[in-house]
Length: 286
Ligand code: SAM
Image (cartoon, rainbow, N blue to C red; front, side, top):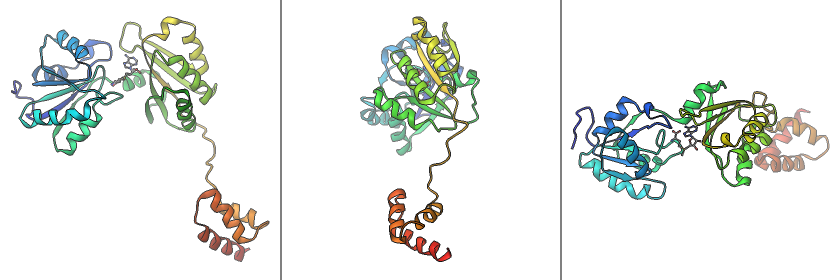
C-alpha cells in the first residue's frame, strides 16, 4: 500500500542507482525506493546490498534478460492492483545496456504509468569529463564479443562524424582497443574512462595506440570497468554515391544507350527502363 503520498498509485518508477560511489544515489531515488511496494531488479543479491546500505527491507522481483518478457504480466497485475513499483539495475540507469527495455515497451503499450527517477549513467559521467566533443555523440554500447563481428562493426563506424561512446569490460578491453586502433588509425583522439566515481578512477587521453600502450603496460589498469570514447571523423571520405549523369556521359562515349543503362542499373540498383530513357535524353542533348 502507498506509504508516501508523493508516489502515484499504479506507477512504475525507473530508478537510476550509483555506478560505484553510493553517495551518488539521489534523494529522490532514496525516497522512491523507501516508499514503493515492490522493487524489480536485475540481481536480487546486488540490490539487497543497496537496500541494506539504506536500511530498507523490500519485496524484490528479479527481472533480467532471460525472464523479462514473462514478468510483464506479473508487473502489470501488481500495478493494476494499485501498488507502486521501482525498476533498478545493478548499476546506473536501467535500460542503458541493462535489462528493462522489453518490460517498459510492453507496459507503455498497455498504457501503464511510468516515471523516470534520473541519476547516474556511465556514458554521461564519462563524457562530462573526457574533453572530447559532446555537441553530438552516438552511444554504441558493448561491441560484439566475436572478433569478426567486432571488426565489422568498427569498420562501419570509421566515417561516423559524431563522438562515439562504447562500454567495455576488463575481459576484452585490450583486444577492443587493439581493434579500434586498427580500424580508426593512429591519429584519432580518444579517451578511456576507467572505474568512474570509484577510488581508482582513471582517465586516459590521446591516440588509440598511445592509450593501448599505456594500459597494456600496467596490469592493474586492465581491471575494472571501462568507457571508451573516440572522436568522430572530422574529415570523412567523399560520398561514394554514384553521379549517374557523369557516368552516363563517360559510358555513352563507348557504349550504346541500352548497354550503358544496364551497367548503371547493375551499379546503382536503379530501374533499367528509367535509366534507358535517361540515356536517350542525355544522348539527345549531346
Ligand atoms: N546501466 C549502466 C549505465 O547506466 O551506465 C551500464 C550497465 S553495463 C551492464 C556495465 C558497463 O557500463 C561496464 O562494462 C562499463 O563499460 C560501464 N560502466 C559501468 N560503471 C562504470 C564505472 N564505474 N566506470 C567505468 N565504466 C562503467
